[in-house]
Image: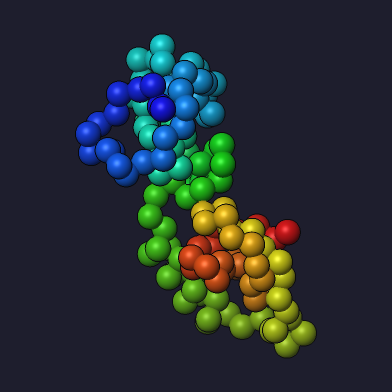
Length: 132
């Protein structure tokens, strides 16, 4: 499906995206297949240059630039954010406010307790969400 040769470590562990290397890197817009830069396959199956991913991470980017799925295991960051939210109560008028959300990681829709620091997905626990 990918029409690309990936490391055997990825066998059965990545999402295939049709012709993954036959497109432009979403960061630098250079054609991936012709590039001398090493490609990096993200958990969502999208591909970009390893150096572009490193640049994204250096600027605190943790989402795929194509589909917004987290590019790495964020559970430790989500636990830390949950602790920060627990230590920072919202004013009474917002304490029980529910807002509709879409999770970028598991694609679930639902409601989350409003907090200025983040909106947690009830399905997977991610804070990689957006208010809808």
